[in-house]
Image 1 (cartoon, helix red, strand yellow):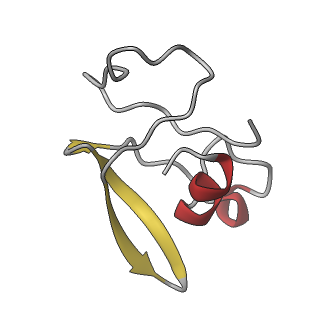
Image 2 (image 1 turned 45 degrees about the vertical axis):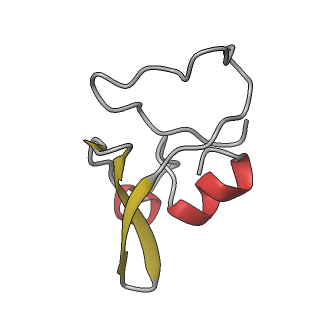
Length: 73
């Protein structure tokens, strides 16, 4: 896995899915400043994370396109 986001509080893996297996979720997103940001996964709010550009160092979070590339979204 290249990147990760913190699972929203209360999120559970779908039945029959093991750790490290891909699965699909419904994500609520907004386009801001040319980037797609994830706000909710399966109706649960995602913890806000600093942008890599804002931190000046590598972030543990990812944008929506990164999530798609890694199979999260």
